Amino acid sequence: MTPRPLNLIPIDRADDPRVADYLNIRDAQLANGFSPAGPRYMAEGELVVETMLRAARPAESVLLLPSRLETMGSLLAQHLAPEAPVYIASQSVMDAIVGIHLHRGVLALGMRWPLPPLPEVLRDATSLLVLEDLTNHDNMGGLFRTAAALGGQRPAIILSPRCCDPLYRKSLRVSIGHALHVPYTIATDWPHSLDAIAAAGFATIAMTPAGSVDLREIAATRPARPAIVLGTEGRGLSGDAMSRCTHRARIAMHNNVDSLNVVVAGAIALHALV
Image 1 (cartoon, one colour):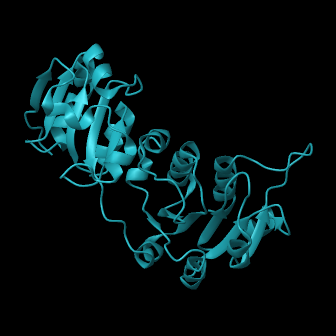
Image 2 (image 1 turned 180 degrees about the horizontal axis):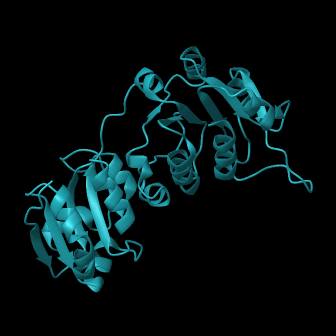
């Protein structure tokens, strides 16, 4: 793509109406469509915004420090629409706009997209992480990064309805933007959706220490399309979810350690099965 001139707009005060969409905005406001433009998300940090642009998720606007323009100018010129504003603000003005000093010098607003239906995700995926009631944003972001790294050719993620939002700012930051290109959807008919996942040809594998076999035994059978089902770190998977899975697997541990962080468990399972 031929680089185009950027629509650069200097901002010298936090109450400039042109950056009102960035002013102390919370994730819930963005997701609920507080703006007439509709539901959106905010990407922060150079790596996340770069992933956003390369994943063909159009940026509505960008807000950044002058120093970030030097490092990201070429990328922005290649991927931004000509009319998309690129707001330039000093560190003090940007901190006053955002309200917190966690933006790492670059922010971008993007439009949310309609989530694909479950059958479409199942048709195209070669491996799945299936997450039940995962509400920790760090873990959500970590699992998207893990799926991208270890999930094989076409990983995807299925969320139960009570999972947290992968596009919340913290989740997106921890995922380093991979939630913008790893396909995902919400299984609204939970836990019955596990039956549909199995019917689509996936081996549904509940990760649990209770009544399970060593993960290596299942890995030895080389399931063609593994769907690794993970629950919350406290309660674990619900009985209803486990009863609908075709396998139950545990990770062998020593020194009386009975569990692992869900991101670590997901990574080990993907590495063993994909």
